[in-house]
Image 1: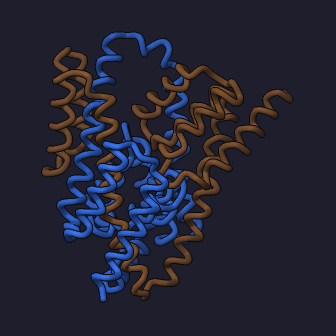
Image 2: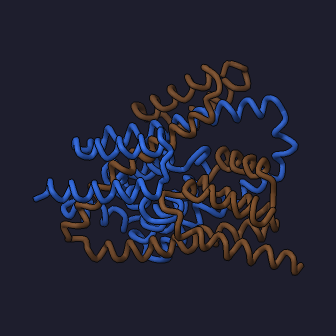
Image 3: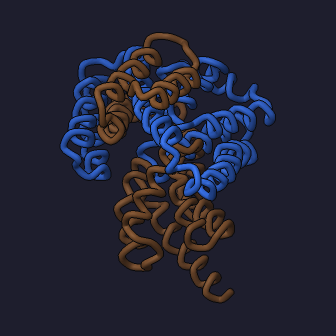
Amino acid sequence: MTPTDSGAAQARLQAISRTQLFASFLKMGLLGFGGVLPWARRVIVDERRWLSDREFAELIGLCQVLPGPNVVNLAVIVGTRSRGPVGALLAVGALLFVPVGVMLLIAMSYDQVANVPYVRDGIAAASAAAAGLILGTATRLLVQARPPLRGMLTGSAAFVAVGLLHWPLFWVIVVLIAVGVTVEWGASR
Amino acid sequence: MSADLHALTELAVRFSALSLVAIGGINAIVPEIHRVVVDVQGWMTSAEFARLFALAQIAPGPNAMVVALVGWKVAGIAGALVATIATCGPSSLACYYAWRWADRLQESRWRAIVQRALAPIAIGLIMASGYTLAQGADRSPGAFALTIAAATALAFTRINPVWLLGVAALAGIAGIA
C-alpha cells in the first residue's frame, strides 16, 4: 500500500461482494485452530488474492499497533475498505460470533472429553503443529516481503525483545515504531 | 438475577476498559485479565483460568476468545456475548476511525513511511508469538519435530494447513509425538 499500488489493492478490495466477505472471514474464524493469522494470510493472499504478501504484512503491522485483537482489527480494515461500515460489521461478525458458539460447545463438553487419553494426546500434538503454522506464516511473510536490512534489524529486535527477553509488549512496540519510522524517514530522503 | 446483572455489568465495564489498552493484541492484557478475574473478582482460580486459556488456544477462532470463555464461566451465554462485545467493540471502533483517518492520508509520504516501518516489526512479533507457543507445546522431541515440519511446510509449500494439523493430531494419538 505504498502510494503507487494502494489504488490497485483498493480496487481489488472494493470488488469483494458482501457474501464473499462474510464467507471468507467465517472460514478464517472456523479453521483458525491455534491462531487465525495463518488462515487469514492463506485466505486473503493465496486463495482470494485480495492483497499481496507485502500489503498483508503492512496491514498486519498497523493492526498490531492499534489496540485490540490483531485479526479483529484486520477484519475491521478489510471490511471497511471493501464495503464500508457494514463490511466491517460483516467481517468481524463472521470472524467472531460463530467461533464463539463453537468454542462454547467445546467448553461445555471439555470436562467429559479432555481426560480421554486419545483426545488429550491428539490436541497436544496438534498444538505443536499450530505453533509451527504461526512460525511458518512469519517465515513466509519475511521471504515474500523481503524487508531491507534496516527492517530486518527492527524485526529481529521485536522478536528478541518479546520472544526471548519477555519485555512488555507495549513498550517494545512504542520504542521500535519510533526507531523504525525515524530510520525509514531517513532512508526515504 | 441481580447477581447475574451485577456480574454482566462488571464484565462489560472491566473488559471494555481493557479493550483500548490491548496494544499488540490480547496477549498484552492477559496478565491484567488474570488479575481482575482471579485476584480482584474471585470469579475462578488461577488453575481454572490457565485451563480456559489453553482451551482458547486450541479451539477455532481468535485466541482473544479466551474472554468469551471467561464470560461464559462467570455468567453463562450472556456473559460470553457481553465479554466478547466489550473486548472487541471499543478497539474495533478505534481501528475503524484510525483507518478512516489513515485513508485520507493515502497520498502522503508519511503513511508509506509508517507502513514500511511497521511491516518488519509485525513479522518479528508474529515470530515471537509462534516461538512462545512452541515453547509451551513442544514437550517432547516428537512435538518439536511436528512444529518444525509444520513451519517448513507452511512457509515453502502451498499445502492446506488442515492436513498438517490433522496429521499432527493422528501422530499424537498414535503416540509418535
